[in-house]
Amino acid sequence: MQVDGMTDEDYIFLKQLQALQVDQRRKHMLGDAREIVARAEEMGPIRELEHAERDRQAVLRLEDNARRKKEEEEFRRLEELRRQEEERRRQEEEKRREEEARRRAEEEARLRAQRERELQAKREALRKAQEEAERRAREQAEQRLREEAQRQERLRQEEELRRNKAQADIVAFFQLYDAKWQELKLSKTLTSVMLCEMPWPILQQGCTSPDDISRSSMEEFIFHPLRPGMELKSRKDRLKVEILRFHPDKFNSNIAHKLRECDREKAIEIAGALARMLTNMMGEEIKKEKGQ
Image (cartoon, rainbow, N blue to C red; front, side, top):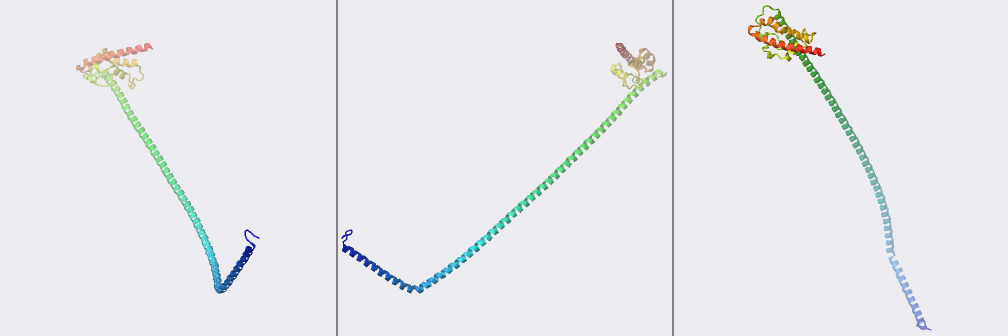
């Protein structure tokens, strides 16, 4: 019988060979085991030392682990303390910053209040200065007004004095004029009256020619409101008084011979010119009355 090209003898031989191999392996294994046991017996003390060393190393590792764990715990404790310290410092720093910010805010508020007080004081001082300046300006204006009023009053008084004096002078001039005519009419001894002394109906003295007398100057004299004794007389009555004085018949017969001989002719000439102007003025007044 053949199996896969093997005969029975080959197969039996193969089996025997396999058995032999197994037996040899068993022997080898047994030898190895004996050798191992021998070596183990030889290595026993060494193994014990190794075990003791391993135990010692194990103890050391346990101790090292315990120490490391303790160090780790200490490190964690220290780390926690450090973290707590940092947190405390952070809180303190934050508190310090808040306190600093509060102090800064208070200082700024104090400075603002101080500046506001100073500004208010300056505004108040400025207001008082303005009020004082306005008061002084008002006082000065009032003083100027008083001074101006006083000056105006002085001027008014001076003007009034001048006017009164002028009026008094005019009244005195009129009185002198009337007094001269009174003396000319009543005196029996006058024979040397100078031409410049003659009372002519104008507000000036020293008339030496008919050209020195104008109608306007004569009207001013005759109708002057300050002329004493003439206040109630009409314009015609005033003219009539002067016409009677300077009419040629009366003047030449009653007045002319009382002047100096050298002045008589000129006086008669002036009186004639005055009489003509007075007559014309009287005619105009009569026409006015008729026209009314």
